[in-house]
Image (tube, rainbow, N blue to C red; front, side, top):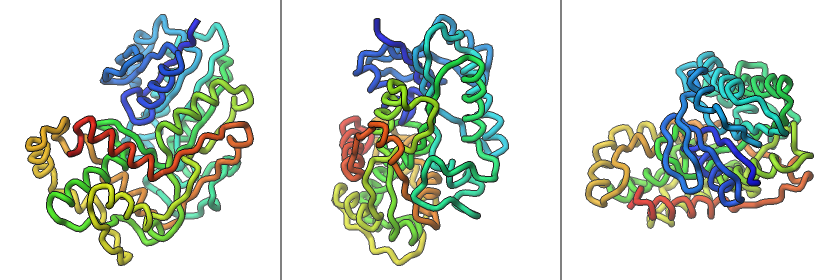
Length: 353
């Protein structure tokens, strides 16, 4: 009998990649989101996790062997992030029928575990890089910690195993996603090519010159499945990145070349995308209409604020993968190839020309 999986946030970058991998591996997959999208091999479930009773009703009769929590809702303050996102995890785990067989719950958070929330992003005293899982929580409120605590409390109550997964910036496809650097850069490059504007790196000198890494959504999905199926990985937290490191001064040129552009020289001055793209919604709609693209709404494709937050950090950020490597997770993904694969998919799906 096939195992059952519940992917929470199945319409997002991580959730859709995870649901797709599980379906390929023969799992029966349920995909929960507020507005489900069609995906082959995935049975959609519509639910708003902020509504406890509606969530419980939507989950009635579903007894998954594994639950993958890949969603969150951004709020105006970290206090609200904590209140809303902790409640979403609590409502989900309270709403599931109590497990009658071993169950695993995987929670996707990220490197803000080490860097702090957006209100204090990359500020104050931070752990030494590369970030390692044994580095403790920062002495600051963080909705990732609140989400973890909800998982830990429910695991103690219901007896399931858990894993926490901390990716760096995720590369993957999802329309309407709040944190989507790959598609944001693809749209920005398209706009630069259209207008003749320079393809200018938007971030800091520290990011341009320093080492960094990223996480392909397929790489994260593979680790989520590995942790669910590997007993030694249960009740553990894991970093997850592609396995290579690079400098943006190299990657920026690689991305420019893919779009037939020349990378603009970088003089150390940040040029945030929120400013560069502030008035581009009408232009993008015109491009979409001319090229018969699938999404004319720039706001549903690009998330300049998040790309600016990542590329504007004043510190070098690299991530250690030794913990999961020692336990047998050996998958690798070159980051430039991850970008190129995403760009090809966006073009094939008529999201960029």
